[in-house]
Length: 81
Image (cartoon, rainbow, N blue to C red):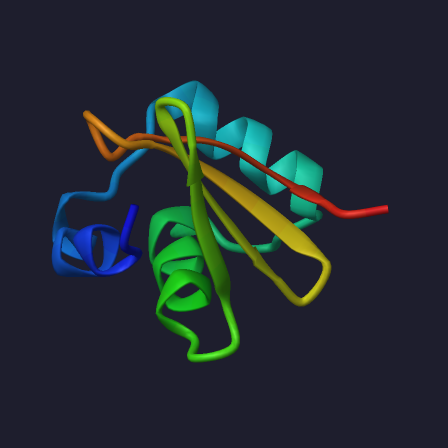
């Protein structure tokens, strides 16, 4: 599926309280605004965006962000090893 669908719906991207904690821990972030952090990564022209099943995957800077394609919820983000 075309990544433009995700980019056109960038304003719908959000996460849960537990998602914030999980993403901060996984990426070792020192910010409470993990949604904006993830959106900026997704919007980067070097971000590799692809869809598998019900999720979008966004890979950039050794980070992989998983976003549900129906609800636009950031499920998780982790470092690529």
